[in-house]
Amino acid sequence: MRTSDHPKNPRAVHLAPTLLRMTLAALLLVGPLAAVTIHAKADGLAPKQGAGFVLFVSLQRQSMS
Image (cartoon, rainbow, N blue to C red; front, side, top):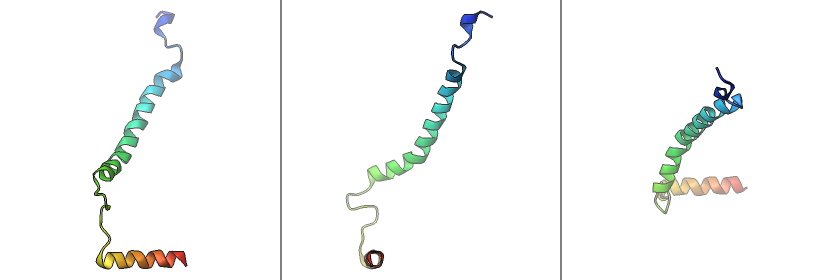
């Protein structure tokens, strides 16, 4: 085998697949959250009204005291 057939940096050979796997894992974890955020309504996923709003306000007041 000639010396030119060997990679100059053996770590570089393993770095590319590792970075590709990390990128794919990040996309799988963050992708759905990003999609929901992009397609959410301007007033949020669940508009605060009725009992949900009362619960939200009471929890906010409790956390401030």
